[in-house]
Image 1 (tube, helix red, strand yellow):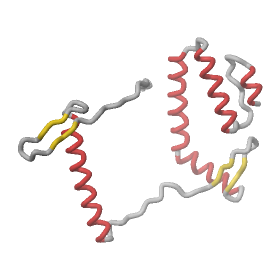
Image 2: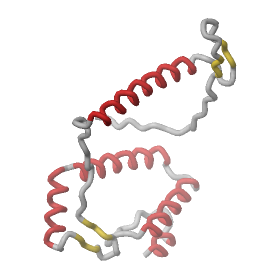
Image 3: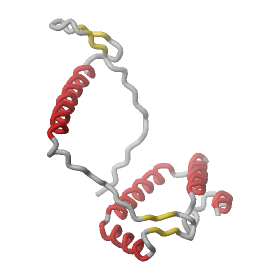
Image 4: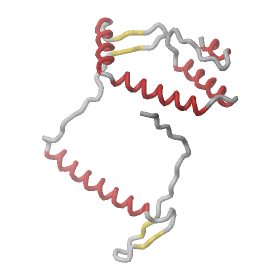
Length: 160
C-alpha cells in the first residue's frame, strides 16, 4: 500500500485500512515533497489545523470514549485492526491526593515558595540584556542577563 501511495503524485490516497507508522512517515515525506514542488502550503497548513482540532474533539468526546470502551469490552479489553494497530482498554489520568500527609504538605509549601522566588528572579534577569553583567548595589550580587533563543515557525488561528 505504501508503494502505491508514493507512486501516485499529488493524489490524496483513499485509505481503506489503517497505516503503519512506517507508511505514515512515507506518506508525510511524500506530501512535503509535493508541497516543495509547488503545492498550496497555506491551504495545507489550514487543513492540518482543522484536522487537528477535529481529531482532538473526537478523542475527547465522552460519547466516543464510551463507545470505544464498550467495543473493547466485547473483545476482552483489546483488539487488533486489519492493519495491525492494537487498541487496548487502559486507565489514564491517574491522580493522587497527598494533602493529608504532613511531610508532603511541608515540602509542597517549600517547593511553591522556591518556584515563586525562581519566577521573580527570572523576571528580573529578563530585564538585563543577554550576556551583560549587572551588580546589585545593595547586595553586591552579580546578575548575568540570560541568552535568548527562539525558533521561527507559524501560527494558525481558525475562524470561530
